[in-house]
Image 1: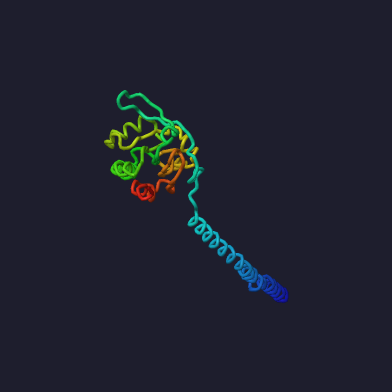
Image 2: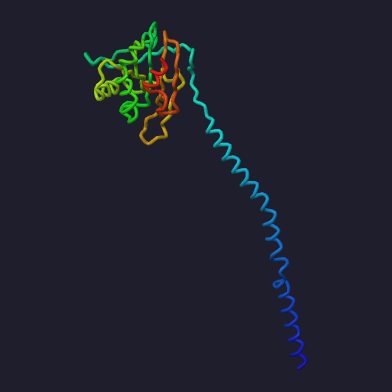
Length: 231
């Protein structure tokens, strides 16, 4: 009996000594509570910083200015443009200097031949207003696009243009690059590559008098009507 009592007491003592650390709440919950409290200020700071960054980005985007290498008062850089002679089918060239020297010239650019806004609004607008523009002293009206001369001729035929507006190819983007108005569309699924931003320029003897430059391919201030108002 004595041995039995001794073993029972020993087992009881062991169970109690093992159970105490398992049942004690202090070691198990103190660390997570302390950790959560210490983390909260950092979390708040990160959220605040994120909101500030978004606000700064929005503020920056809303004040973005449209820039180019050319500005009012500058002489247009010379460059060679091309077109297809409708009578012979041969590729001909013309320089910007010959189009503008001693003349009042309107040069307007489109991102691409056969594209919707260019085909439905921009070029047709200048075709329909060509007579009014010439009555105000404009000698030359020419559309420039980073397309080859063959595409520009096909586009001219499709639009039914005669001699109201010249459609000129800046196929290698040389003139576009000199003006600093490149439009990078390589990330677009249609694969247009690097084209020209939309613009309309009024030049007198090669000097820029009016420069209406659009943001990308937007069509807000480069129409024939806008140029009529500026004359």
